[in-house]
Length: 246
Image (tube, rainbow, N blue to C red; front, side, top):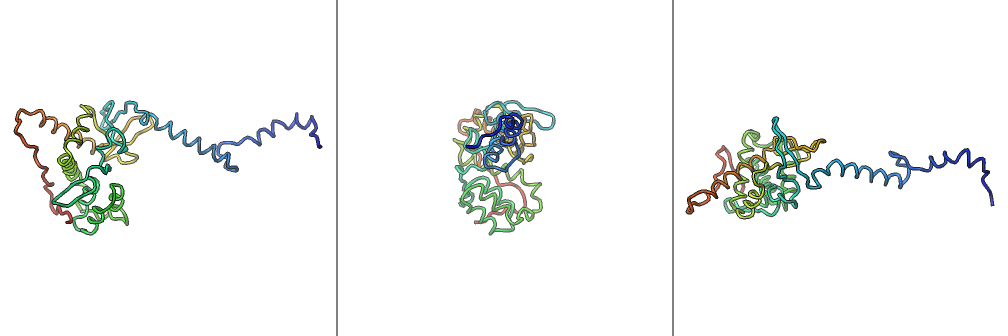
């Protein structure tokens, strides 16, 4: 049996302990790598915990901050049915079935490409429809006036969704009360808003604004005095070359 001299332990023990201890950023061992992965996961959770824990979330745009918003993010969450990515709201337009409002909206980019529209329509779910609309640089070939007409097209898609799923969709809109509705996005500040480090969502939130517009119109109609009134069928957007494949 070989013994380690006591004076060696005394003089080098701390160095040995330091060398055997894994350091952050050191990926020389599986254990150290696992520690780093756990640390990064924890930091990610802490950065997003304000939203995930269900605490009130504010939305700010153009100098105005709205408190305690109804947040649209994941389809399984409380207001997930308001998302265009929800696959539970199929649509029929001129006898043609669309799997989601997202698929219908994306297909409107390409009135000049019926095969692309058909591929988007036949996608098995909303995310696949979105991917079909953007693959191979297709977005660069959207209709020339897309930026000018996309809000009006989205308004029509949402009204079709409400018209064809009135009970469920209206219940979700009404559930939001008079709160601001905001779509939480990872990077899209036009249709949604991005959660920043201070826990506030910032962006134009055009989708949320359209949902609030439709909510307010519908609540006003439901509270009207005319019991014989019939919910108006959504009119297609009044824009040129509004063509959908059959």
